[in-house]
Image 1: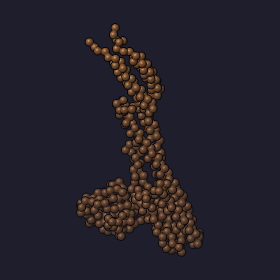
Image 2: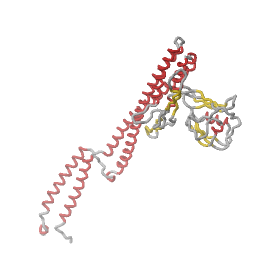
Image 3: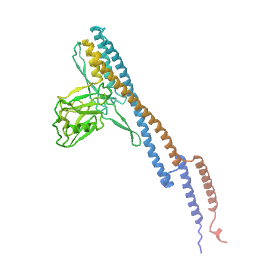
Image 4: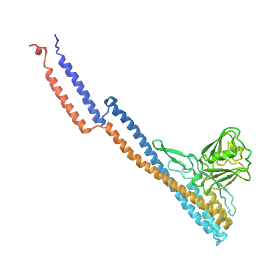
Length: 414
């Protein structure tokens, strides 16, 4: 025998009402957020996909932002390099004019005045600072002033002039991620952009009897070369040449010293990382001295910067040395122009690559956003229809409950 209570209808009705209210509340939340998945248990598989897509979208947005930042930096640097190229072309015109032999010494001194102003403009470009306050041509040492100027007395001038320009930055490059595990390297070392000739170092110490006593390592143009105990100078030359650095090493047939030469226009950057091999060979001073001004006293150096070339032209104009202008100086200016054009072309190529990555990442972002929408976004028209049906059912349930509440136990006694 089953006992019938007057509370049974009420309890069943209340339970169904709470269930309907829960479903209606969930539907309202979905419409309010326009998201189909409110909790992981709503659709575990889709939720897993959604988390991965959202994570990837964040990375793609960062890649796009990195590429846009690079395009701005490349465009800004290229502007200063193009301006420097115009300056050097004007300097070449003055060099050709000064070398033709028809001008007096006073005329050549007047040319030297313009060359000196152009030199200042060239240094100003090399020390350019971006809108973020970082130096554009100092490598990764962006808070340092790339080039320092030494003033001094120059023959033919009654006032102090720029006598020497020294590089203060470094040659380190920064790898910026522009795609999954894909990096675009930014090489903005000023002693490469504003260099005129291949640099050569001629060691003055006989290295034929040298032998490494312990394991060590040296850095050649930013590339680390390991040295094993027992290596001689010929082993060292072979390792440097095989290292991939833009430097070629050799042993001088006369002095037996170690010679180093860059493969393009740049300042040679060498140091002992571990041990003292280069110091023992007389190439550099002790490890407390930092490159590039750590060369040994017996080392002879050739190949200078654009600034050295322009200073040499100005000095030759001041002294009326037409022969020097038409020979060594003009040749050095041509080499500097060639290197600067190469650097501008390289910067332009890097800009184009960064711009292509901006375009590709922008398209990828749209595709991933569509995937996120497919997995997590709400079908709004269907959701509104479902909510109206739930609301209609809820109202019908309330109406039915109102009628049931009027019943008592006597209605079941027949």
